[in-house]
Amino acid sequence: MIKNTFISFHEKKEESKGSVEFQVFSFTNKIRRLTSHLELHRKDYLSQRGLRKILGKRQRLLAYLSKKNRVRYKELINQLNIRELKTR
Image (cartoon, rainbow, N blue to C red):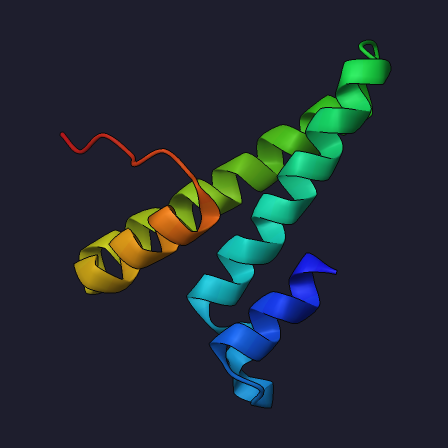
């Protein structure tokens, strides 16, 4: 499973599950899973709402990480294959 490989890759400490990187990683997995679900069930509006909420949470976490540590942000973006956010 992807989650287990990330945990072993990142760190095996308990506090790593609360890190920004791990949270962004878990949100990304949920987003990918919901996206594939919505390709089959286009009128599942409750799942669409959940997807939008998770996208917003991930966006806020990425903005926080971008402000605090740009190097970790860039590494995470490259590792997860996510587009970089445009800054104003």
